[in-house]
Image (tube, rainbow over all chains, first blue to last red; front, side, top):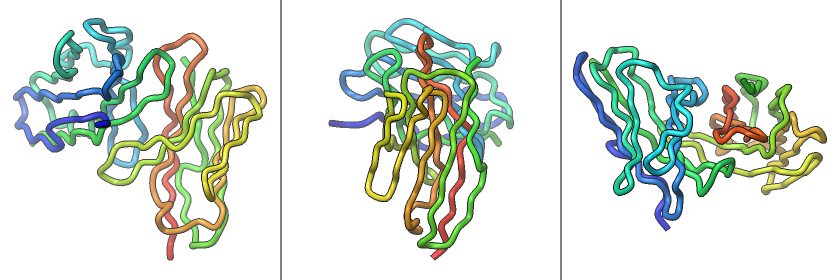
Length: 113
Length: 111
């Protein structure tokens, strides 16, 4: 039973480019959460999605960031026109339902040059 | 907004010592999870506590959920270098869908 999968594991972008981070939830999980983590800090909630719906995006910056979880395929976190401050580890988690425990992927480490 | 405060933020101890990490909030949670994260990896779920006053044991780790379901503790007996990592608590609100995470406790166990 495969766990949460994220790719790429490492992503390097130059300022102004776009970054696309992918997350495939655990089998049977229809709820996906994205978090951002800076070195030696905790997880900061960004967005919570269910299939084809954004449930809570209160932690997502208003500009340049967007997320989707289509009916088919992985969830995508998209960062447009990246800046150096976007450099961080981005984690995806999935759960079978609202309020259930979450299981995390290995993360994508984004470095903006 | 529900907040979870973890203490201490950093803890460095010798192998064989005992330690306790705390997770406190002014909000009531329907359940609370503890995770452990190693450098370069995602958090790994250790335990979920649901009932006020609940105590769960996982080998040398003991987890307790406060009677009022507002706080929790993690106690490690005879710590080993393999226990080194970032320990995170996360609470599920009674009405909210997402979890609230604490900022974590970074534990270093020296051989």
